[in-house]
Image (cartoon, rainbow, N blue to C red; front, top):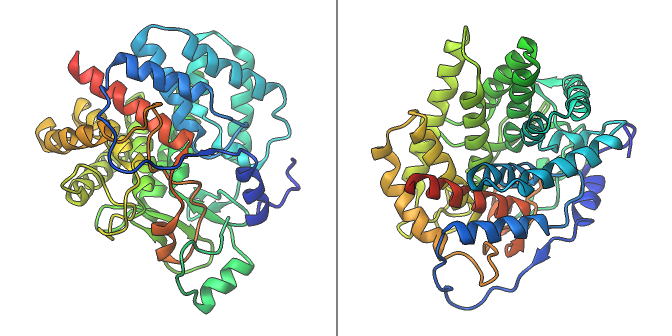
Length: 389
């Protein structure tokens, strides 16, 4: 791969498909509830290290961050060492950078580079930041793809003329997933290098995502396209998880100082998002695949994301514990019933890609063992264990 590669839908499809994530057949009836204790968390961490990673792609960030978090919680260094090994392996062959490097688990790699005193990895990440910040801007936010990874929608939804036109020639895009990539990475690297320019860029990017993709109802849309009116993918459940954890990372790692107004805007965004998610939670503790479509079915990664985000927000004082306590309790009970016997989070969807057809999101195939399921699950168990200490 090189910068000459046109990262359109077909190239993106090939990269995702090459990873061959494992799909599970779902057993009939709910499984026995799992005991979400340290032993279970350790099993989740072991499972993550066996996933068929390829450097890098969507969803890696949350899995690698979960391993670093588990190393911190458990005082077992091998989990952080695993992340460091992947980071060093990537760094040795990372040039020339390509657009897919936007999915590098940047904040996790900065963390292990500092942990092990690795200037070579820090230097590689600094070069990557320079590359990522050279991308064109769409209304102040770095363009993710030069050609959006649009696919024919899952399900049998009708496509309009506009949908067919965009599918045939996708324009550049920005996606909510990147709120978990770029801003936390730039903030972590800025802190490590004491670089005010990177810290300011992290804030500017986070603020841009909020301005462009968060709706009046508090929920984030999935993406927008350069030159096209409107937003796409309203109410995608897991997308709210990328947004929530990304925003909390930026707020929680900002060094303080003269950016109080910008941080207040991000805090308000988190509060609106959490309020919206509480209103959308089902009685059984889970959230529907599409939050604005209560009958859109099950997808359990959203539940894991929300447990983590709600508890982190409460611990930092962004929201009160009393606001999220009931929702977290229901979600924890739901999560405990959502694993297969081998510790795989059930009903997690495959790569969603992008579609201008709203009905697409309710029909993405589910039942995959993937970083964007197992990573959030481990983070959620860690946060629940922290609450119990």
